[in-house]
Length: 504
Ligand SMILES: Cc1cc2nc3c(=O)[nH]c(=O)nc-3n(C[C@H](O)[C@H](O)[C@H](O)COP(=O)(O)OP(=O)(O)OC[C@H]3O[C@@H](n4cnc5c(N)ncnc54)[C@H](O)[C@@H]3O)c2cc1C
Image 1 (cartoon, rainbow, N blue to C red):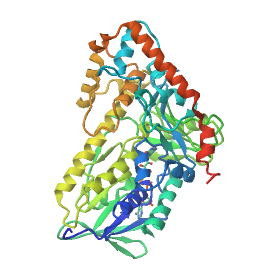
Image 2 (image 1 turned 180 degrees about the vertical axis):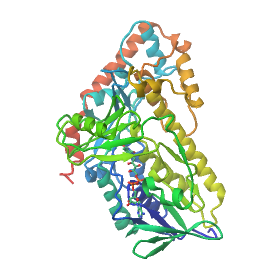
Image 3 (image 1 turned 180 degrees about the horizontal axis):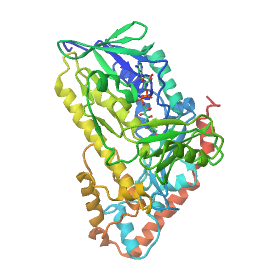
Image 4 (image 1 turned 60 degrees about the vertical axis):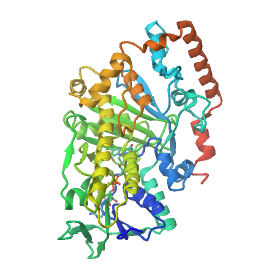
């Protein structure tokens, strides 16, 4: 027994971050004598976007006792096998970032060295032909990710797309009905600090109520009411590295195929997302306000919708970066209150998830040992910076010439960790891995190769096999992928059978 256990947690904000935190904390702390309350304003709406995820979300679903299909049934969800990038490597180009491996390694040599060896000998087969996940996505088909794949060729995973509003509602019902989380509606208009410790003591609501707690979790969105506001923690801005600072979102009717992937299409001053859901398509234009006006951005997105718009344009301004500290005194920020990396690789929700898990693993008592906060802040800072570097690569590696925003991106001075990674890959295909990277080698490989960044030479150990031997092995890999595709199911059929809201 600890001497001073946390007795009460107040979560400020009822968006994706607030309800994800409430549900998982309630589950993880179910044997602890701690009460959890979520307070949200009926007058301040949630950000209303955030509909694409990465496969790690499946761990969160498992941790709260839900299956992928439970969530998808409740949220008009669809499956996501990766992201298709259109126009990033120049007009008319496209490539895929799959949630899966490429080919099979052999004798300790990664597959891409063998592929490169054959490429240098004149074989034009794209790397993507050795990715089951990519081939499935391009066929608009899905297969359940195998629990025990026979070899690396079968290794892939999926994530989900969901309606953000329905997802928050699904979690809110779970948290309040199954786990006894208290839900308070009210707008906070004051925060009181303890005069001795400087900790947050309570928040006051516009209707006169006061809410006290031992631990405060700031999920108040871009406002960062507690950490940024009351505690005055500053913001580290990355606008010099990532050019986009605004977005407009407009959902529309779906008139084309139910693709099992997000599409990201480069446009002159940013990029457009397309996220297919069962009942609609989510669309957004993420752009640089230095290169296009809001009106032009809205008009561009409107002109590119595949079906009738289902809502007015939702304009969002953001500052890419993060709070200088994520945990300070008795307050931890999650979600947009902690920071924001633009949605190019759908990483905000996964950062919320890892933040909650990290809080659980470093859970404090009422003494709030600063060592716990230090470790939380050290890891979270690294996690943000690693994702930032992955996003920066997308812009830096572009091949769109004659467009000021994109031209400037190719001249970026890269953070040294990214510059080193690039040098190593360019030199001999070496993949550098850092601590706390959210994206693993195959993700980096897909971006390098997709953007046309190729190594000068391959691992000499790949010469163990002759060209003929490699051709035969690689042909067998393509055959095996073809056979798996033949057993797969169209995405729309799979959803209708397993996770249609109508079937719920
Ligand atoms: C353009 C864009 C696209 C995105 N796309 C993706 C994506 O594809 N994938 C992904 O993972 N993430 C994406 N994100 C991020 C994702 O939307 C957020 O991480 C996620 O929705 C969490 O938001 P939140 O809960 O932190 O904040 P919000 O949704 O803004 O919720 C804030 C909450 O705080 C409450 N609040 C605020 N002030 C007060 C107050 N004074 N009193 C009481 N309550 C208050 C509000 O009522 C609300 O409930 C995107 C973000 C943007 C901007």
